[in-house]
Image (tube, rainbow, N blue to C red; front, side, top):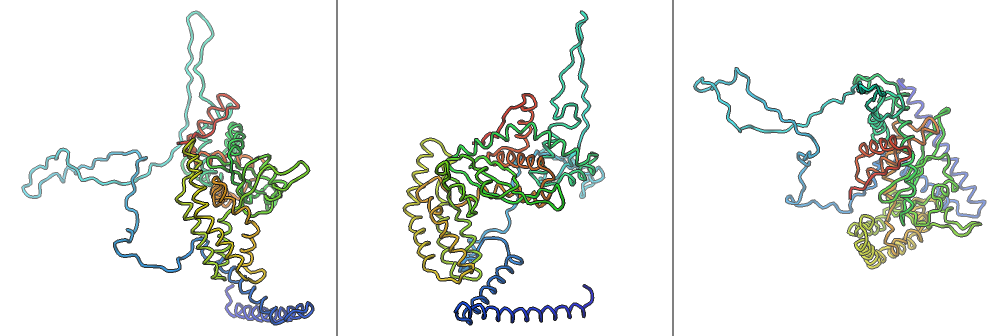
Length: 499
């Protein structure tokens, strides 16, 4: 709007309308309280307090920092000797190839400035420095000439074998398809953007052709993807979570959901049209271990006994989600600082404990025993103090503090399992990290255009993230797995652990 006077008039009208609605709210609240036999003034004050709290939280979500980090209660200035150096200095680059570049003097400059004689090279003496540079990516058109052989006896000629092909008779290599897959599902570049980048670098190709390569590559990798659930569900504890994903085949698109289950060294994604309890049962299947989840009710339906007997798995809940509720409530209820300090102490204890999933045999057994002993000695009193604090609080119905308290106490039995089960971590952050790539990808290419698109996306996200969890280069893994499957269809190749 460019007309300043019109803008001022509209602002005045909005302010008047806001005042009218506020007055109307007062009358309605008072009438409602009178009919219920309540104190009208007290009820009105409660409503106003809740509105002020909602406004403060909304402003924080819109304009505040999204980080869950909190400022310390007392910010002490460290002594000068303890202050960390700003920056990190030059980083070592052990993975980069080194290219030696010798810089000689020009012939005209090889003259002594004192006597005018010719300067001689000082053998072995240089002044050295380093510079990180870039060599542009380039595409090549390989022209294969398969040599033919024949025998003077007149037998049939023999031809050298052709290299493995992604698509029979196709023009694009396996490593090209792997590159496109990593650009889209590993680094979140939509195919249309890749098309423009490739054209700038000399390769003329359209996004449909790029999709055809992804589809063919996914077909070869399908057996490996289908082998992931058995790996994940063999763990005594798994993590589960979900996030929305758009199906864009018609109109503005429909909201589907990416469901994820993960263990310490594998992750499996599925993109499904529903977020219901029935879908949660479909995703978890007959898993008989412990499932770490957030407070979403759909997961709790999985553990309810049915006509076929009790549920096979049990749920544990996430302290990070509890903490987030109190971090949000702290902005309007400073009393939350006390419980946040107690939760912080729980995490400090966990930071010093060994991780059993990276160990085996006797070392793993010893790590589990240590985790159990330390938790029973140090964490149990903290958990008791958290519950005691929560039961002592008084809060307004519907307030952020009340919601945080109710959330924690309703999930209490699942939040305290970690005290008796050393396999259980404090939070569900592992699976949230595995969903991060899908969330970033969703922001860049918005979702999938077809059912096949959801299947291909789930496959590549699962395999790429499992490779990263196991410390293997996703490009090397995908190339190796695809070539093995092309040579022997149906071959299952999973990333190997770096340990």
